[in-house]
Length: 178
Image (tube, rainbow, N blue to C red):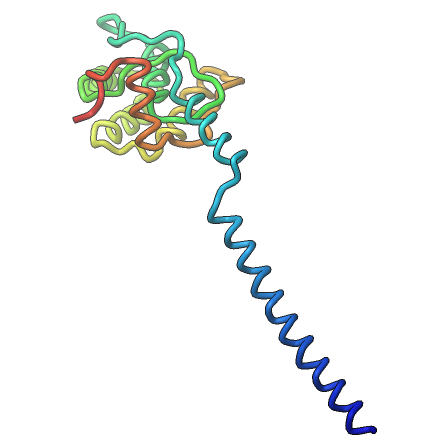
């Protein structure tokens, strides 16, 4: 009779081990599946953010509207508005197309100036002139802080699809890059 008890205990231990092993594997599978397939709420949040970041905003102008010898604060405002094409922020007001013509024009103005922040502004304009917008959010926040911003701080960069939609909504398809 003692042998039967040991056999039953042995079968229970083996069965329990196998059951535990399957439940652990299923736990990992369900966690990975949850990560791979976003919930409809997550998808809705992405759609809402896309719409929010790419919507038509107020204060859109197409040229720089700067005098022959602009003030530093006016150049900072223009560059701030140009950066709106690249960045994510809760609120944006004012936009100017960030195209080679406007970038070159702003670069030339800064390079001929005696602005207090000439070195910083020229470094940003030079990066933009070279097609480097990887720090456009930091550039935006630099201008934003110089203007004592309290709302609308940039928290990242728009992806290519978001930027294209922003350009179409605010400037028109003719301003899309080639």
